[in-house]
Amino acid sequence: MNERLCTAPAPASVPAREASSAPDRAPITRGPGRNHRWKVLGVGVAANVSFAAAMGGIPATAVQMRSAYALANGDLGIVLGMIGLGIAISELPWGLLTDRWGDRRVLLVGLMVTAAALVALGVWGVPTPNFVPSMPMLAAGMLTIGVLGGSVNGSSGRAVMRWFHDSERGLAMSVRQCAVPLGGGIGALLLPGAAVHFGFGAVFFGLGAACIAAAVMAWGWLVEPPEEPHETTSTAARAANAAGGRPVASYSPLRDARLLSTALGMAVLAMPQIAVVTFGTVFLHDFAHVGVVTISLTLGAVQAGAAITRVWSGRYTDKRRNRPAYLRTCTIVVGGVFALLALLVAALAHRPEWLAHGTPWMIALLIAGGVVASAWHGIAFTELATRAGASRAGTALGIGNTGVFLTMFLTPLTIPWLLSIGGWGLVWAGGLLCAALAWPLFVWSHRERPRA
Image (cartoon, rainbow, N blue to C red; front, side, top):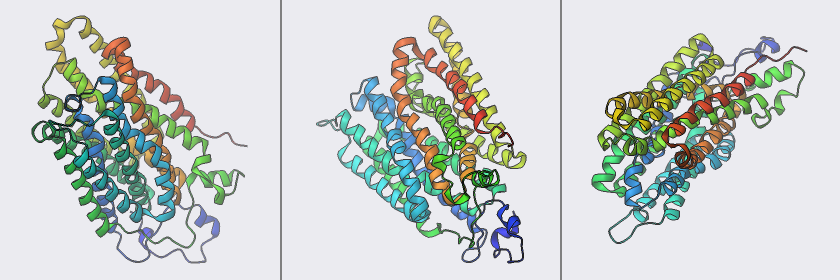
């Protein structure tokens, strides 16, 4: 890592144009040493694991939730989508607040209020022999969890951006992002069994305790690095200034068309992953007729594979410096895997006698689809944050997460409708359509600007 990250700002004799062209960074001049950045990354991982266990683990209890709360498939889709809706409507406000208040305050407050909401749901939102909470009540609880938990993403991502140099950000952001499938995998492995044997009270109280533990880590380790007197600017702002565009100081991620195009591509390409996470349990139960253990292991494999590939992709793109090309490659692979899954499911639907032999292949393709549809997340968020610059990373990450989690709300609502029209084959064919829509958005957002 560049040693200048931990030294004082360059002397006044360094030419101004040389300083202005340096990579975006926030050198540490006092306080914790350079190795403290790994503790900050650990806080980001812990915070995201704790919330992702709720975000990905609660949908893994879909079969148990449908039975315990007496929900139809349509109502189940609404309930599961509410967490994503809550995150979507709160991500940008939380991101703007993070850029204004700082990472530590927002992350601490967000984790504690999310824990409080989960505990409240464990007290008043659990079915008993004499009382079953209504669907609107359960949906409101999920919406609240999403709104409050949306604080975790932007605040932890901004902290990582400000502590790591650009040559390490792909790896660092991917490690932070791998916490999402890691937490979801833990939730998928533990929560369905907890719901069956101990009830949903244990599910909600356990998730609340995880958020409190992450808040304790943030309290002890998360500090903001001091900035140098003249903070360097984002790649997008420097490019606009060099081209004679608007001044660097007026740059806003909200007005950056290429950043918004990347964010829209991320939102579309997230749909196949969300389909696997939210309705994969229902698919395996209703179509493949497999048990709870197989379902939990399958979703756990999806999340574990996603975590591993996110870390690998971060290191790979840091070395090759090929993040845009990597995003386009992932788009192609996602389309191919989901096309194969859709064809296999359609064939098994017409020839049920093949189901016993086809189920292992179907599960393998479902795992592969969930993994490749998750592998690109850390790279895409690194692109957004790098383009916007460290001081505006909270806003940029908020924009990206708004789109991704809006699709987390819309996808569970769309799946029952597709299911009623064309069955599970049509549902998984949607992954191919999403890849086809995301491809031109990634191509346009990273194409070279024509020279004046």
